[in-house]
Amino acid sequence: MQWVVFTAAFFASAVEFKEVQTPMMPALQVNIADPIFIGDFCGFILALPTALFLSYWISSGSIRHSATGVLAAFAGALFGFLAILGWVGTLIFSTPLSGANGVTTFFGSLLLCSILGGMACIFTDQVILRRNTRDYRNFRVRP
Image 1 (cartoon, rainbow, N blue to C red):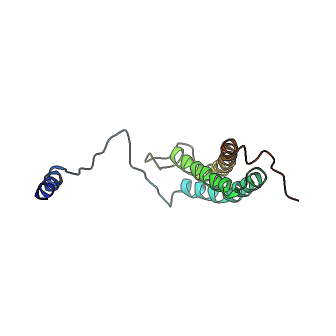
Image 2 (tube, one colour):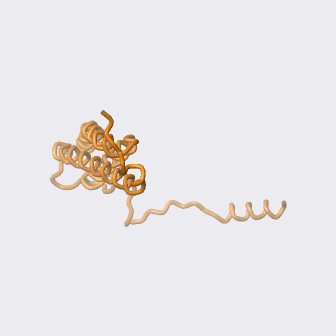
Image 3 (tube, rainbow, N blue to C red):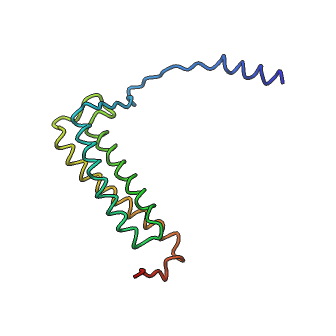
């Protein structure tokens, strides 16, 4: 028992936590008052009803649990939001992309989040159908 306490004390004193800053990977920065962030967020919020309704509509006819498709659509739309914010905004770099403003970011986010939400739903439906083909061979739409 004494050996375990000595080993833990030795390793605790030997490990030093230092903040390492590298020029290759800057810290993630989110500025809520930035017009690019506001445009991206509003585009994401307006794209959610479109993406989620479309994914529910697609999934209800193809797989039994349509909540999986809706969850995948939300994940795809969230990925689009973060991709636009990282590419155009100040998520990764301290200065935004030159020539970008809130309006163009809004429309880009609206389109990209809707498209990626639908694509994620379709991809997830295909994965589920491929893994469970036995369950869906004689699948009939209920009247």
